[in-house]
Length: 345
Image 1 (tube, rainbow, N blue to C red):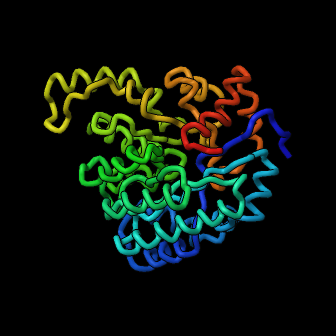
Image 2: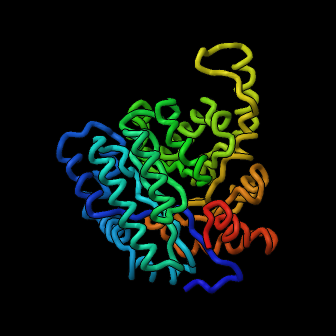
C-alpha cells in the first residue's frame, strides 16, 4: 500500500475496454484482417492464455471493484480513462461509429458511478470525420467527458491528411485536449521490428506515435489550430529529446525546398512542443527523462500517468513521489496540471 501524499495523484493514461470492443477485435482476428501491427498486438492480448494477457484482459474490462482496489493499493486518487488501443481505428466505418458511441456511454456511466475516482476521454471514429466531430461534441457537452483520444493510424491512414482535420477543429472549438496514443506500428514500419520482437511498447509504439505526432506538426496542424492542445504519452515519444535537431534540420530542409510536401511553418517545431504539446510519464517513471522534459517543455506541460493496466507497478508511483523537484512543482506534476488541462474538479 502506497502512503497518501499531500497532493492528488491523477493518472492520465489509463485504459479500459468493453466487451463489444473485444468481440469486434475477435471478428477481425478470425476474418483475415490484414494489419500486422494489430495482429501482433491483439493476437497476443486477446487470444493468448499466458498469465499476463489474461490478467490484462480482466483489468481492462473492470471499471468497478478490481480497478478501484488497485488504485487504492497504488495510491492513485483519480484515473483518466480512455478506450484501450487500438480503439475503434481498425474497424470498418459503421462498426467504428457504433463502438465509439457505446464505449463513450459505458465509460460515462462508470464515471457517474465513481465520480470522485474517474474522469474520461472520448473515443471517436476517424473513418468518418464528420461523425467523429459530432461524437466528440456529444461526449464533452452531454456526457461530461474531458477530451478525446485517438490511437495512431486508422486502417493505414495518418491523421495529418486535411480530410481528418474536422476532428481537431472540434477539439479546439470545445477547448478540450486530444490525446495521441500508440497502436501497432504502420505496416510500412513494422517489418524489422517484428523480426526482433520490438514492435510493441518496448520500441515500435514510440516510433509510430512519434512519427505520427511529427507528421501532424510539420503538416501545419498548429498553424491551422493554434489553440489546440495535443497530449502525447511516454515522455513525448522522444520528441522533446530531439528538439534542437528537429528545429535545425526542418529549417534547412524547408529552405532548400527539398520536398514539395514540406512547407514553412510559422514557428519552430520546438515552439509547438512547448506551447501546444503536453506529455505524460505513462510507462516512463525514471527521473532523468522526466527532468529533461520538464526543462524542455516547462513544468506545466508534464503530467503523471501510470499506463494501467499494461504497466501496473506500484513501485513506479514511489519513484515519481521521490522526484527531486519542489513541493509546488510536484503538486503540479501529479495534480494541478491535469486539473487545468482536462478541466477536472
